[in-house]
Length: 168
Image (cartoon, rainbow, N blue to C red; front, side):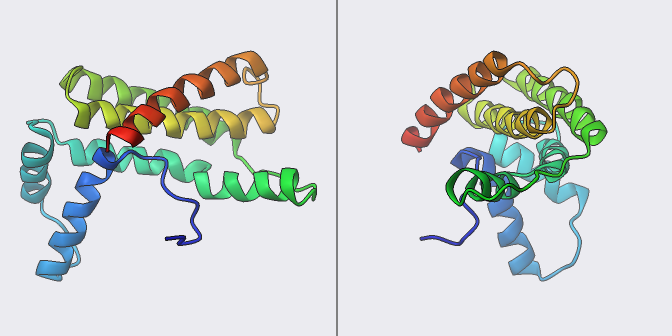
């Protein structure tokens, strides 16, 4: 199915909380969640006493700075349609978002280094980081001009994402 959103950069395990959230909101028809729901969901979905839902919210805030959907549109406009358009990016916010997503990934790694569900969330963090890196690179931000480093980051992420995608 093509929803017109170019898909998700997250492996299936990374959307477990969103699925539970949708079910909870549909079932209870409330407009807010309790901390109890988040803690319970974290335990049931990720076997963690850490509030993984709070980490996922931080991931979402980071991806809003320069998201996958906008990047795909920009790429299509510039590379396929041959229209010169800009990829807007607040470089200060994007740089801060990279530091934030790196912190989230480190906190997730501290939960478990072997659980596929947690590792897939780390992989999603790396995907968000990669999109931010591309946005900064395209906008010639200081410290993000190295093509070789960007290609290496993309290649490493794509290999791991491919494995996760086929596993699910």
